Length: 181
Image (cartoon, rainbow, N blue to C red; front, side):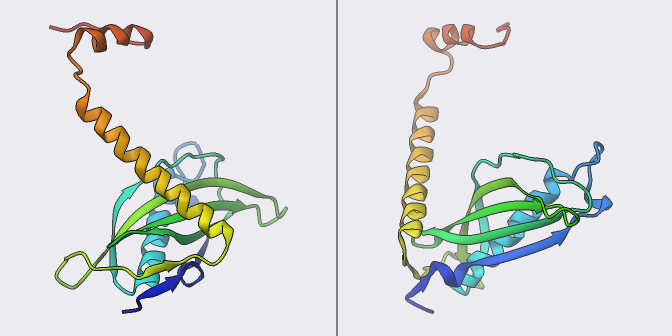
């Protein structure tokens, strides 16, 4: 196994023409289909980077920014932004292009955490990430911040007493009716 690898070595692009079979009931490309493509490119990117089989551990927020139309070309670009011991954060940017007009729109961005595995399903060490420019440094730091924020959120979620008078009173600020039995 390589002891280090570059971000450039992880880069991968996937393009696919969107067909009527990929659409939902409103005639737009189904979000689940786009998520499937994103998971595929995350797997390919992470596996290419570390040379091992990889599994998806988590997916950070996926915002559907613009709908994708039937007949558009969807382009997914991915690269490794961060590595831990056995995990990697793969950044994914999705755009769609109207192949008749050439108009390109950003449709999704997300971050997939992938974990490298051996043949027995055990976690394996991934190569160190070589950062070659300030854009790669920025993406690495953004990953550190997202990981830290996620850990803080989980701590707060675990420590919050949802049944306390204060927590229940706070619910008055939301669009709910509280009818506890």
